[in-house]
Each structure stands twice: as C-alpha cells, then as structure tokens.
Image: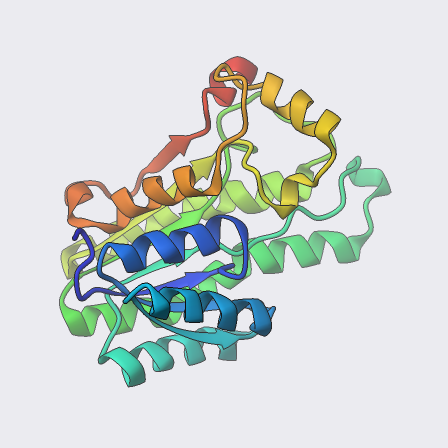
Length: 251
C-alpha cells in the first residue's frame, strides 16, 4: 500500500477528480481528510470509504476562506495525529470570454478559488508537514496557460493555473530542505462536472487529444497518487502532464 498510514487532505472531493482521488488514496492505506462545499456529498463519500475499510473524515467549507484551510489541517491533526500530504485539487473554470468583456468579479472569483486558495492551503499545510519531518503537496493545475499556444476566452483560468505552477516551483525551492516536495499536476480534458454533459462538446474536446478521448477521473487520481507517494521521492518543483497528449496537439 503506497500511502499506508499517511494522512492526506483532498479538496474538491465531493465529485470528479477529488472524489476519485480520495477513494484511490484510501484504498492505498491513507487516512483522508476530504473537503468541498457540498457537505452532503462529502459525507456520502466518507461513508463509502469507511464501508470499504478505509479511513475518512469530512469538513465542508469554502477554500477561498483562509480559516477553512486552517480547519482542515486542524482536523487532520485531531483525527489522525498530523498531516503528511495534500492534494489541493478544488477549482473552477469561470466564465469564458475575451478580457474586454469579462466581469471583474469573474476574474477575482477564478483567481481566489484556483490560486489564492492554494496559497492559504500551503501556508498552513507546510508547518504541519514540517512537524512530521517530510511531506508532499500537489496542486491541480492544467495544460491551459502552460503548454499550449493559448486558448481564447480562458484568460482568468489560464492565469490562475499558470500561477499554481509558479507557486509549486517556489515552494519546492523553499522547503526541499525540510523534506517537503511540491508539484503541480496538469490534467487534460476529464469527465467531470466542469466538462459538462453535452455529448457534442465531449466529442469535440476528445478530438483535441491524440488519444481521442477524455480522461476518467480515476486516471488523474492515479497520477496524483504517484506524486504523493514515495514512488516520486526525487520529484519536486515539477509540472507533471497527464493530458492525453492535448498539449502536443495544440502547442
């Protein structure tokens, strides 16, 4: 079991990649602290993990709230004695459109949800990991804003996701000596609520990928498992692409 007795925070865990990751991590022996806004779905997931002999506790909240970042770390300590790793996965796409037409509120919402929340998370997760003597943090970024030539209408999303990569690199430099690794994970198109449920849109997005399909959430969860486990013990400051080749198609 690659994560045996490790305690891991997973945000955005009520559905999609986050929920899949929580299940995968628990199956690999981790104690999971799951967070998202939808408390009912979190409780259901925690119950499913417990029924499968895993260990999970949930706490609903808004990742844009600094106090919520504190509360997740405190819950990990109270329930499991400390914190070993975190998959900071929650995020939003926001409105799509050109910058001159974009509402300022949309820009702030996307940046605060996708990027500022990661700052809050790291601010409180890192001291807890230092108490353990080591740790691993993964941020869910995206190929958008990093590997391709640019996608029209996605400026706020691209800026936030590119910012996560810069944040991961700086944190990796700052805390490598503390035994803490920090990486960004860059998924491609994935079957989640963010991708909607229109078959024609799915077909179009799938066609952008050389593999000619979207990822299942569990496939991205497996990539996160690698980065959080000791299998990647010499990997830090990286931007790991798990995008079905879409970046080479568009780049």
